Image (tube, rainbow, N blue to C red):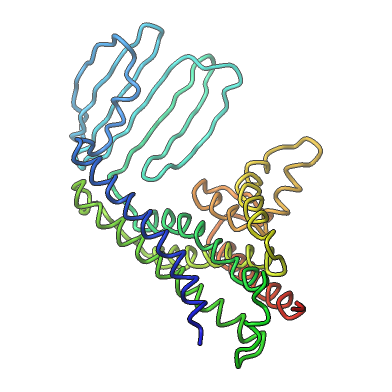
Length: 326
């Protein structure tokens, strides 16, 4: 009875799986072409600098470079393979202290006088949490396409949809259930492929999980569903304009978190207020460990917030669906 709903979800899944397969092949090709683990020291050595090698008391290997313009680069390689890169160089005008996380790499910048010190730490530990977060973002893009399901039915198919032996709310619920199952399947497949690439790079032994991993997995599931709920609520009563709405919605979701630090005309305050119902803002918070919403950063706030966004979005879309007229 729900062949059309399953077929629609499968079409989106098929496109996503093809893209995943291509990315997997590119990962294999990258390894075969000689690209392995990242050596962060290779990307910051001053031109013409001479290397001085030494050994730290804990057994770490130290390589120090002195540049022509006062730069000092120290590469520290720990016995477990972790690398720390310390770069001291002349600061540019307006340099400020900052901290960022990119995958397994932590970057800290600290200005002092006319100089600035950048410390880049690359841990060989690969958190399973990070694989789920990356997968959740990728899957959310395709889940947002699934979120157009009710608007697709509204585009000339209402008469057929309402002839099925089920109420409007029941029909919307079944459609959402099919989409949710597809989204969770895509999330699982994406993580499996990510893990499958690790042995190719000799990195499977670095995969690690901790007590917070289960919470992160729950966060990722709710993030994917929250994006789905927001898209569904935005487009449920639209017809052909739903694709345009989605094309406008994604840039807005991505840009708004970047406006939260703007003080001019209270733009940052407004952006934080809107970002409280923006699932992507919680992704920024997760990766940067700094809140972009009116809520503090932390799982204890983000998980309930994403659950509420999901529930409100789906209920709003059902309310719109009930009011439609063929």
